[in-house]
Amino acid sequence: MPPKENPLKLNVLQLKTLTLLQELAKDPQNAAAQRDGAIRITRFPSAHGNHFHIGDAAVNASDASGLYNENVWKALDRKALTQSSYPNAIALTPAGLSYDTGAGKKILHRADH
Image (cartoon, rainbow, N blue to C red; front, side, top):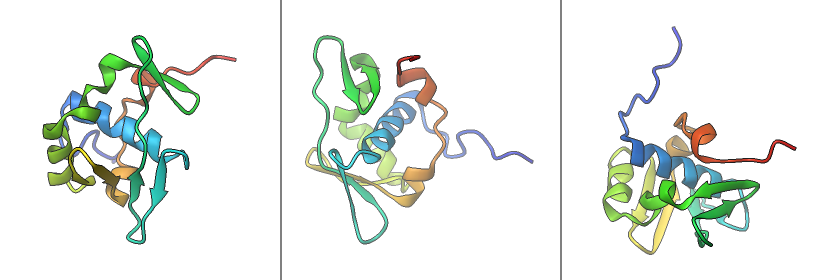
C-alpha cells in the first residue's frame, strides 16, 4: 500500500511553509546542521517585488506568508516537524526534513532550461 498523502493533516499554509523551510534547509547559506539531526534555518530570503528566490527557485511572496506567522510555526512544532522560538529561530527536525508535502512543484518555480 502506498504511503498516505499528508498523514499529519497539515493545512495548505502549513504545507507551503514546510516546503519552503525544507528548500531553505538544503542551502548551506541559509541553514546549519545541528547535533540532533535537525537543520536550523539561519537566514530567510527577502522579497523583491512579488517574489523571492530560494536557490534556483522563485517563490511568489503570497505563498510564503507562513514563514512569518507564529501560529504556523507553533502548529509545525506540535506535529514535531520543527523546533522553534518565534520569531528568532526555527529548525526542521528529521521528520520535518523528510515529510512529503507534495507542494514543491506548485510553489517552487524553476526555469525550464
